[in-house]
Length: 298
Ligand code: NAD
View 1: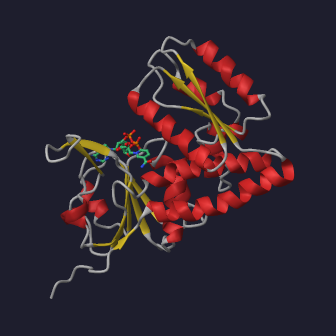
View 2 (view 1 turned 45 degrees about the vertical axis):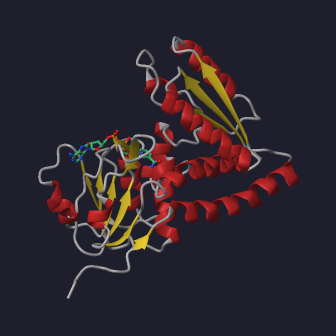
């Protein structure tokens, strides 16, 4: 008898995203009708990194589709730190702006931390300001970083249990791993789990991933997690977005996650596909944080 799961649930971020956007539409309409407020995001792009340009374009598109405003400040690569901070200060004081986003990575000549810290915590819709990280770790999250926030929504939508579970996170970045830890380890919605965080200093990664009821992987290594590294019935959230060469594809490449999807599928209780899993949630959560900020401005 095959002991593997046959009813693996595919955790589609697009379903969750549609559900959240429907609810956001009601809130946006109410803001417009009752308070004459249209949620507005001001994004700042320094230089001409093609991947960053693509991200900014998709954010603009998503905001437009939801009848919100997204403006982009395109700055040259040689922009000085003081000029950038001056621009941010102006946006901090502009009442028509509800969210400020600095597209990362910034050119090496600029101090990313100093620049992110100059964004008003009230308009920090990316949730990267130390004050917002502090609120999260005190159990009172205000603006949650978009990717981990989107993962909580996926877990909620598909009713994946977290309480009394062992969640294993692979990766400790400021944008995914660390805030994810804070959300799952505390007694918050879709939290109250026992959480282990693995990283490059972890000895014998499989020892931990095999113990996971919920495995969240954000390492940035294509198809890193194989079937023999997990136990049967694991819920898997694959955050990775990796471009790998593939001559059989028209574009010459394909996008894969950090999980070897086909190797892990039968063994997992549920799994996010890549693309189409966590990815669609990130911009939706940015919209959600911007709408929250607009509501807070009343
Ligand atoms: P990162 O690239 O900054 O760091 C990778 C993390 O993985 C580090 O903390 C490191 O300690 C850990 N790691 C690397 N090799 C490891 C190993 N062999 N064993 C254990 N841990 C190891 O992380 P990031 O910025 O969170 O990005 C991770 C992946 O997630 C990337 O593929 C990125 O493109 C993707 N990502 C996707 C979204 C989305 O919207 N879906 C958002 C953010 C990041």
